[in-house]
Structures are given as structure tokens and as C-alpha cells.
Length: 411
Image 1 (cartoon, helix red, strand yellow):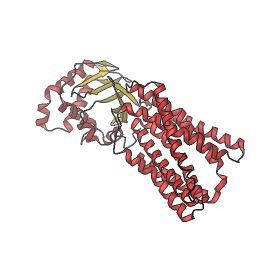
Image 2 (tube, rainbow, N blue to C red):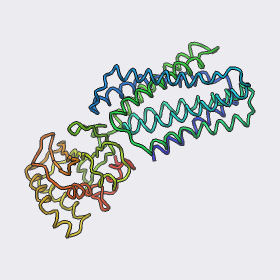
Image 3 (cartoon, rainbow, N blue to C red):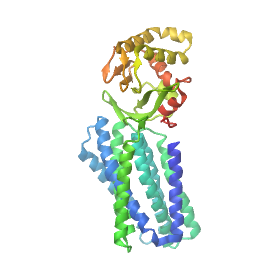
Image 4 (tube, rainbow, N blue to C red):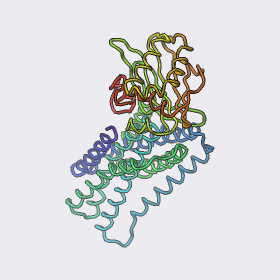
């Protein structure tokens, strides 16, 4: 739903920029100046630091220098794409149409950048989306200007504007068809940083500065960069539920897991805990999460004191909601082991962090505040039964299930 909303916003942003270009023409320098600062800001304040950090967390051996070389590749690749607009000897109208088509490719890559950024994490996706939306406005302006400037008809310019407005949505949709491995995301974020640096430094900045008041244009560029800096910091703390900070990533052994969603468990009028689900990559289907034989982690940050009996009863009840009596009997050894683990905790105080790790080999381990409380419990069937407590057809709390899957807010 969030990606669909961003796709619609990108369409409207591009369309608005193009339509305003018809009326205001050469008076959009302040907006272009702001866009330049925003696009440069997302490269310097978000994509480059995130590429380095993400590669390190994913266990990649890529050094910062290697990632910066990927940034240089992105910058030069966009340079080649941009210079392809210079088609000497072609009629002016042909230059306008080819120029508009290249801008559409730019916008398509912008959409891919959004989709890939969301694969890395939601805060990265949000920041990249903000930058792309400002850039799409100027893309709309440039699409109209490049066609009309090259003696193209108004109707032709409008057709290209609509194509350019649709391109980011197509790019976003394309990323739904594939999931990149975690180490590759760091390289790709660095590559997109090079794209954004070229767009800001070689396209938007010169266009905004050309023959316009220097102070106001420069001031708007600084403001654009400052706004993106604030957006990066706000997005970094966006994952907060019931006053509890929820990390965007966690590590299970050598595997980096990303936050899929988080929400608050309530019972009657009491707040019980904040749950957070971590996966190798984001997933919108609860059934797919439960069925996938891949590492997962569920964390429970307690919002009140709980006894071992309360914890045991809650888990036993949740498992029973989604299993037949026959299935429960088959799982009796694992359920007894889980109850023994909970009893070993004694009581868990408010603020304690319970971690349930689901390993790819089918074993499950429970820890409190980073310390294991019992031996691993074997059985992929048990893993699925335990996950169904929160993600099954009859979860303990429906809106918490939605929050863990990232499909609704649960403050």
C-alpha cells in the first residue's frame, strides 16, 4: 500500500511539474534549486552512509573504497545516458522526442531506486522516495521544456509528460518481481548514489542557477539539502511503537535480518509488549513467512511485568488457536520444552526483551536480554505452530498481525 501511494505521488509530482512548466516556464528556478539540494542530500546523507553500513551488517567484504567506486560507476553511467541527448545533425523535433524518452528512462530508474531502497529497509525507502518526488517534479518541468524548446507541439509534449509520469510506477512495480541478496543491496545503493549525484550536480544545479538570482537560488539549494538531512534523521527513528524504539535491523549469527513490521500486543485494557518481526527481506504475506524455511526473529519488548505462568499460558493458548487436537498431541514434546524454557525465566520484568529465533535448520531458541534460556527446540512443524500464534489464521490479535506484516499502523 505504501509503495502504491508513492507511485501515485510520483505520477502527480511529475504531472504537476510539467503542467506548471507550461505556465511559469522560466520562473521555476527556486523549485529546481530546492530539488538540486534534496537530490544531493539523499546521496550524501542517506545512500552513501547506508550503502557502507548495510554492506558491513550483511557481512560483505566490500570496503568503503569499493562502494565509492560503484558510486563513480553510477555517476559515469548516468553521464553517458545524459550525453546521449546530444544528437547532432538530427531535426530539432527529433532531439526533443529523444530527449523526452531519455528522461522517461531516468524516471524509470528512479522508480527502481525506490523499490530497491525499500528492500534495504523502510527508512531508506522513505528518504529515497522523498528525493525522487522532488526530482520527479523537476523531471516534469524538463520533459515539457525539452519538447517545446525543440519546436515540438503542445500535444506531443503532454503525451511525453504522461509517459514520464507513469515511468516511476513501472520502475517500482519491476522491483516487486525480484528480491536482491543482502550483500548486493550495498553495491546497488552506492550505484544509485552516483545517479543522484549526477542528477543534482550536473542537471538540476546548472539549470536552476542559469541566468537567475544567485542568492535565492543558492539558498533554496541549501534548504533542500537541509530538509533531506532532517528527513534522514526522522526516518532513522521512524520505527517506534508505544514509545519503544524498534531497530531497523538485527543480526542472527552472520545473517542480517530487516524489520518487516512491529506492533503492540494488548490484552483487555493493558499493554503487554511490543512485538517486532525480522526477516531476510520484507514480505507482505503472513502465510509465506510461516512456510518459508529461512531464518526469522521475533522480539517481544515487555510493557509490564509477566510471570512464567502468564507467558506459558499465553503461548500455549496461541498455539492451540491454530492447531487441531491431533496436531497438538503431535507437538506435545516441543510445547513441553517451550513451557520449560518459559518456566526457567521465572518472571520477566517490564522492559525485558524476549527474543525468539527461528533458524533455517528448523530449530527454535528463546533468549531473554540476549541470554539463551534453554536448549534449542527442534522441529519445523513446531516453528510454524509458534509463528502462527502471531501470524496464523487465528492470531492472538488481528491488528498486531497486520502490523507485523507492515500492512497497518499499530501505535
